[in-house]
Image (cartoon, rainbow, N blue to C red; front, side, top):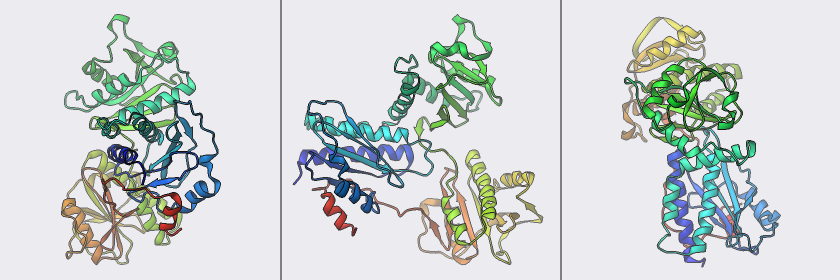
Amino acid sequence: MEDLFLLKCIDHIHDGLCTGLSRFSGPSRAALVYAMDREGPVRVHDPQDLLRGHEPRLRELYLKDRFWAKCDRQENREEMLCERSLDLAGLISFGGRFRNVYHQMWFTDHHVDLCSSGPTERWLEHACRLLSQDLGSRSILDLETSGYVLQDFATHAVRDHIIDIRNMSVGPDTQLRIYPILEAVLNISKTQEEGKWPFGELIFVEPRLVDRVHYLATFAEFEQPAMKDIKHIRKLLQAVEGNRHRLVSDGQRIIGVGTGRMPDFSVNVEFRGRHGFIRLQEETICSFSDGGFHSTTRRANLVQLEEALLELNLDSSKIFNIMKVVGKLVSSAQERKHGCAVVLDFGSPLASISAQHLESPLDLKRHMDLDLATALARVDGALHIDMMYLKLHAFAALLDGRAVPGENRARGARYNSALRFTAEHEQVILVVVSSDRPISIIQHGAELKAACDWIPRYQCMADPPAMEDWVRQNGS
């Protein structure tokens, strides 16, 4: 039986990690592979089967190659010695060694719409540190603290990733403080001006490099708005809305309006109304919306649609054009925050649908017709598209059908009508966009998903199995 205190530490950190990453990236699982000393055994804590399917690779790494036991640990070492990340498909991992935990490797889901894996890796790194810290203190009173810390670690994870990148480039003597910048970004993003959300770019330049910016205008030294003056900065953003100019800050004050190339490794913040993005060089670090940071790129996730199209044996150029049109329709609906449904009909003849039919179908390969289709998507009802020729035949379509298993009353009429309609029409694929952004691809009366739903489990595992037993139990 493993040390009960160790199991409780792992359980609290695991739960906090799953909760925090789910808020940051959407439903997320976590798993841990660890060994308390060099002789093992290596144990697996995987209550949500995150590592299922990776047994052959883990057996090779841990049981055959034994990579984890090849590095001598310094007994007097207090700081973490980082492990190399394990490149497992669909997973993000981070590991480390401490004096009191010889090896630990944390894993979580790699979501398809991730801006950058960096913040998530920093999250896993902190989980490593907290486990070692808790085992070192062995304080029952502080046992739950680590879990709570990991639940709300988004700002810290984003900050740590930005700091790591900048330290490798401009060095550790930077004067640009990231925490105040992130706080200001969230405050600005929540501030409306005359009923409008912020648009435009705000760039934070290393103070010693501000003179390298090409300014169109600068503010008098004693009249430069401080970063804490959120309302004033929100007003100034209007000056860079809809153009290529940017507000320039040294992290303390707004210096002026600049344009052209900015100093390397400046922190670039782009406001896009209710959401925005933080970038460093060419890397998009994260997005932000609703007063918090998130990992999503906010692009439509249409992987299941692409897979369904591949099964129809369409040529690659046709699939590309279909994905381009659907992506445009979905993105427009998401940005305007209205729901819509798109019926992709590959039958001949097309399905009979009660709708507002067009005398001359719109050719969605034409830019102007596609723009009109995005406007028609706002009308209540579905768009009916001839998928093979990419032509819009009708809008405001009413989808009906008989009740089918798997209906979900929590998803609303649009989703459930799509289930019923596709159950009775095998020649269609339906794309449903909810007003709160989720996208569903529905065919044959069921939603196409990349993975099965999983149910959170919060109980402490009695005894995580050894790697040998875990591999054998999973049939590998």
